[in-house]
Image 1 (cartoon, rainbow, N blue to C red):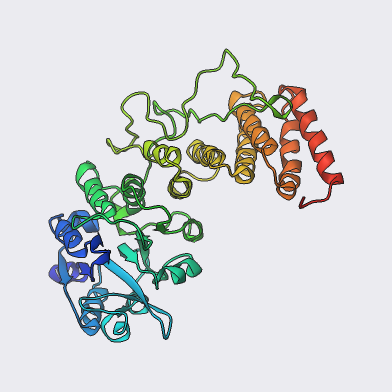
Image 2 (image 1 turned 135 degrees about the vertical axis):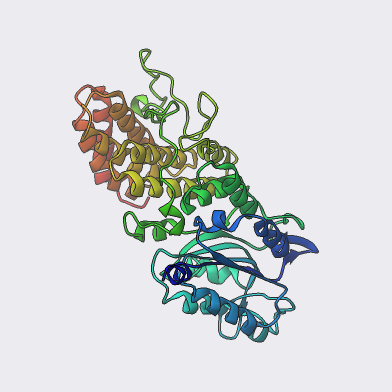
Length: 437
């Protein structure tokens, strides 16, 4: 009976290498190199499970039906399953269906030699929730990219946790070596004393991989938000599920925004009695490591992306971490508020003052519910919201966010009254001016 129970818990790792993505004779994604690198990672680390497991390598397959049979066998395993796919995505232009290119796939033979993407979802559909992880390191060609932009994601089975990146066509490529995302995923598994959960590994890998601008990162923010609170994949069972703490020394020390401007011009100088605050994403004062056994703090990577002008990638990575701490610590927790502040300042750096205003106002309301109105963190959030609001050139956006900002300012009696008067005057002007000019 015991041997039967063990057999029922057997796991599986399925590694699939499609055709390499090549641009102007330069390899963008080398699936064979990725599989070789993953092949030396212990299976317990890949699955985060010590139960007996099987591993299947598919490199150089030409027949999609062969891949389908291997996928079907892997999906039938009763225990945890990891499916890794790397290669080039293309489209059957006749039916507009996404395919993973296999060896020998050409534009004219996609329907017969490529692996239809929906086959993956069909085979995984009936697996129990929480036991399946799909890991992707893909490049889209010029035919597939517009369809992916239309989808906004890469559809897969709702029973699986999907993590990965899809780089757009046209970037120079990384040669024949292991892709940055896969390499950093492996490094995280090797360097962490305790196996982190998949979302944490994914977030750190995305931040460190120097992805091309426009890369589609999965899961998207919308997909993360749709996950049930506390939802975990197989890797989370043995991981504590935390993330690096919000403060530089383990205590909350949120990154402060620029102070609100005097009558819409220069920012108000910081009060002399307030500590100097680091910008979000800058290294910690000590060694830059977050909590959780020496794992790398993602904030330096996020800050580097933002300062390099890669604002969309920085925002996406920060949102991944925010959603993670929301599940781990809950809405309104110091950790969640800190990541909302980071996202607000990233929006300011990107010039998205509409989003920055909404985020800073939300942070102010959340902090006000738990802190006194004269707390420096509450006033800092309000000042950040006001500063970003005064930078809004879009009249409709300013009119939309103004009332909530004014409600927040009214609740802070210790704030300079000129700030509230400034906001009231501007909102009054907006309400009497034609919106849209």
